[in-house]
Length: 196
Image 1 (tube, rainbow, N blue to C red):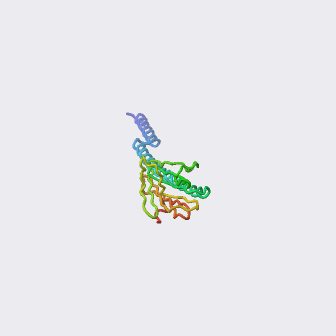
Image 2 (image 1 turned 180 degrees about the vertical axis):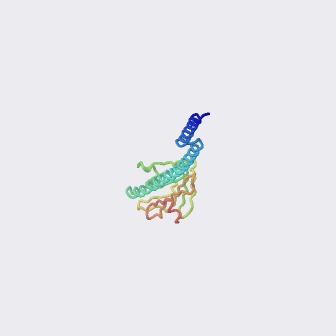
Image 3 (image 1 turned 60 degrees about the vertical axis):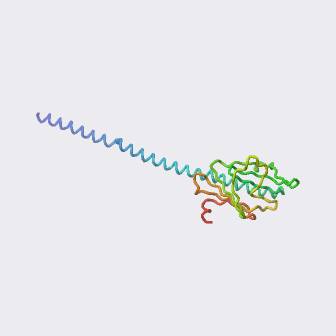
């Protein structure tokens, strides 16, 4: 091997090393790509859990706000129409009825916001009056009588009550709807529940 061949061979090897080194600088290894994919998957899973939890709380908050607003409207409607309005709450939903004074019977009211409403299946309701506990239960199928748990009087007052709504999957988040009977309906947010 002469000097020219040796130098040419050495230059050829040197060029291969440069190309090989340059190639490594521009690409990622399979391990690096897999590690990045695992990190992205973990972050996406964590984000999905947070969004799912917040969605449950928002849906429960909407249901509690709807019921509190309906109770406030009912209290005003009792004053405007000069009638007594009863509210019955059970596991499945709630029912409003007006007291017809002539026959002393409960009748369905024509106002659209006072129609029967169903709770979503994931809502758990716990009702208590301030005088005695009233168990929330499903009414019997043949029960024709309407026995209200809350009365909204034509004077603007109501019977004192406390109603707790919570999501069956997350018992920590709860909304309380309550009234002392004189000062209207109050909705307590979950953060306010811990102060009591």
